[in-house]
Length: 257
Image (tube, rainbow, N blue to C red):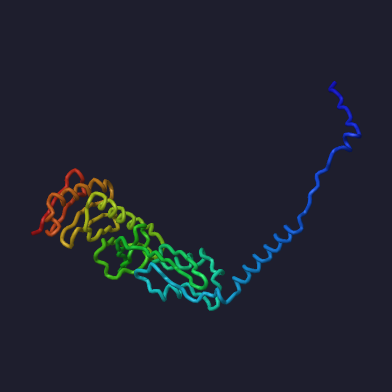
């Protein structure tokens, strides 16, 4: 059997002191007053005409029109600068496919600053009679204005292109991969890359000279052979003809002049 606990004597039970808490009235009053003042300051800031948005600045534009950016935002008169939600404004601005990123800053009392980062064209997509600028992420973002300095990918896409949406069509993916691989092996100044309905690839380094690649299998090996030929004989770019690397084991060079 366990040991029985001895009862605590009454004298010891009554001898325990209870903790007592004292409220500092002045300190409590100061805390409550501070809270009330803070609320009043917030309310005053959100309702005072001093903090109405009087000016909207747009910085970072390269091709977009400042008026068009402001029109997309549509800030109503007497809009309080503290009522603007940065995330909502940024998402609204990014509804324009040309805008890659947007940040919002406030300059008190009434200036809103919009920092815009535009997409940069990496190449041009040509399909169904339309030409579009495409960025390095594979996103078409505007109709191209005769941008002949960039490589053109010629693809007959089966469906319409949505600006601002990443392309996932097979023929586009093949042509884009060919462009990235060609750049990786050192082929520069690419004029255009075409892919037909049978996935046959052809890369033009000029209007007169092309690299016939065939299907996209062993693509890096094929482009590496072509890159070495162009490096060894640079004048090939200005000649009429082609390099046929459809078969890696038996590349062929054909000149027409």
